[in-house]
Image (cartoon, rainbow, N blue to C red):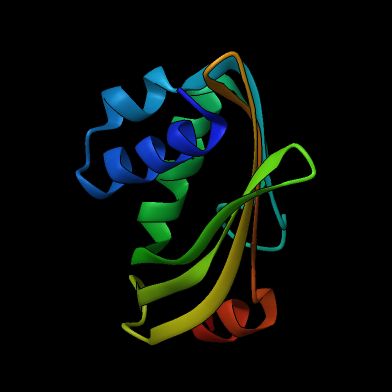
Length: 126
């Protein structure tokens, strides 16, 4: 399976809410990062960290990611799209650009950085 296939399968599993399949594609030592100004942001490690970040994310917002582009560059897989949804606490809707950068080794994600329009998200969060 190519690195692109691994990341494609992670997104498909997340869209289907098949968290067991998604976690199977995450390395036990995977490092996941996102701007720590966000309620779910910070640095997380491994499958447990992936789950913890997901729990904090879904506790704050209800959203779906759409993918406009998914390609390999510089040894990583880049996903470009949008995050659309609502803030759980105040019902504010958002539709913001995002870019995810994945590093895959031996069929498992070993690193992921999630970048969004943080100022726009912070404004929506209130």
